[in-house]
Image (cartoon, rainbow, N blue to C red):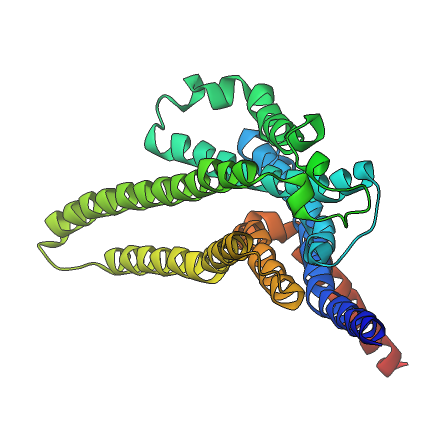
Length: 322
């Protein structure tokens, strides 16, 4: 009697968890995929954007599309899956590869812009620009190599019976998880923060020099241009702070919640679904914020919409006149 009751409860919990996955991860996945396609179309349609910087950003958007596709699968990993060993590996390795490729592409985009701004006179001689294809290949090959390590024997499948339900415990060893989190993810986030902070510091220093020249000409009276530049810098600083709080902090919280659950052996499927969807989904939205914030990326699509709107208005006016 008790076994029937337990099976009924587990079935009910699985249904509730599946509803959570559909309600949270599916809409996020759709937004990520279609918004990335929107920005990619804008870059491809503008020939002026066909350069090294934007090729790196295109690679980032493609990785983000992969992350959007993988998001529902990541959210459902907390559910029980009775599959064979190969399918179990693929179920965990593929989403992990998409996540790592997104992270590596984010670091590369920030690093390329960092080199361009900090070393403008020597940028052409930097390896990122000279060895473009090598740099682009590294942000895909390195994540693939690391994510595939469990497929080459670094797993705990042998310690479990063949009837064991597929879970992260049989695919990822504890050492692998800690190496990925504290050896790759956290250093990558810190490097992005450092490069962004250094760029803002250089921008602030240049702004002070420009303001000094303005005041020398205007006899110590702040000019309108100086006010606009200071306001723009403040807006950028606030925007970057909000990006970190809104998009990076939820992911950092998700990491530590997952590690805590792994240490204590307390897996709450519903809790994991919510934290994974919100945490990873928020990180996957970062490329969209960076892309939509660049008017050059969205201008071609906006022009198409404006033309269609004008045609609709003209057609409507013609019908009214008739």
